[in-house]
Image 1 (cartoon, rainbow, N blue to C red):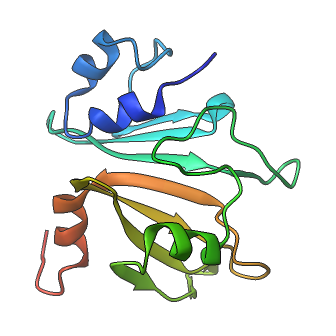
Image 2 (cartoon, one colour; image 1 turned 90 degrees about the vertical axis):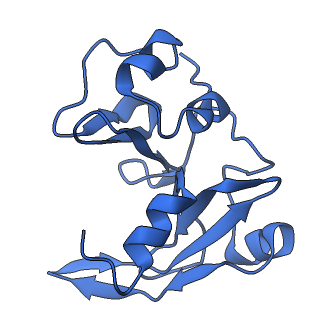
Length: 158
């Protein structure tokens, strides 16, 4: 089963039913607690409560079970299934935001960087690197820039 990742990204901010009606979600099960995990597709969709809509699309590029990089769908915007930090900086420039690696409640989080999409100032993508090891992208999240700006704003209380 092939998922249209670019088509899903174009639906950011749209309600679940609208995305489903466009045949972009092959699963019949609806999101639970704002989340639809499509594990076989290495994809996770996040929906805001109260019908606001699709807020994030997370792609898992590294399979922890097989310890291999594997993503079964075509990546849009020139992205590759195997990307290093250097490759991203060469192709997308410097990140607009950066988070250092840290430990939160015994969860080891690697570095994260936020990049702008070419020719699209409404959507950004966030890459996450492993806590230890090479700076190779293990996950990729697309979201609306407006949502990211709210979350990363030091004065935001929501």
